[in-house]
Length: 161
Image 1 (cartoon, rainbow, N blue to C red):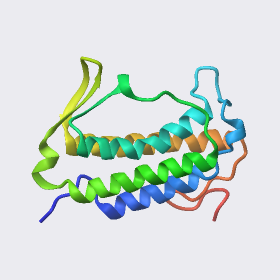
Image 2 (tube, one colour):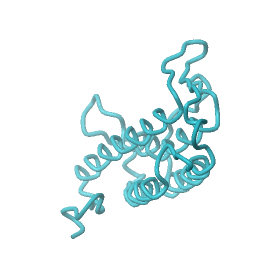
Image 3 (cartoon, rainbow, N blue to C red):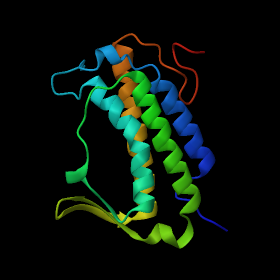
Image 4 (cartoon, rainbow, N blue to C red):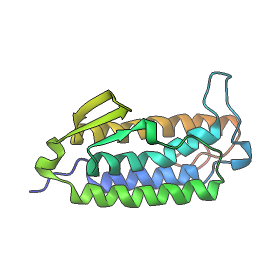
């Protein structure tokens, strides 16, 4: 029996929900933040769009070096969704292909020569999904503050019953 890091039906459900939320991000409000210490809306949305790519990286590569990662920028909603869709496609393919004992291989998060985190692939991938869900939750709060209707996530929202 093949063991997946994340069950594919669960991944598909979480990604569909996340996509519905990203589709509602008002790109013209990208620099808005709910508090001076908060991340801008556009950067938070971009982070959420990128995060499925972390799953693909963690399954296919031995590490991720943050020194080589592009910085945040403000993107149109269409670009965010297109990037998200590509990352989801890559992540789903990696989830389907990398199973069993391969999930016990080590993976590292680095910044140049400094190792920030090292763990087995399987737990890292599940951590990435939880991390994405956390930031998706933040995004719902940002959108609520901007009076953007929130889609159903795990059940009806105040805007969609």
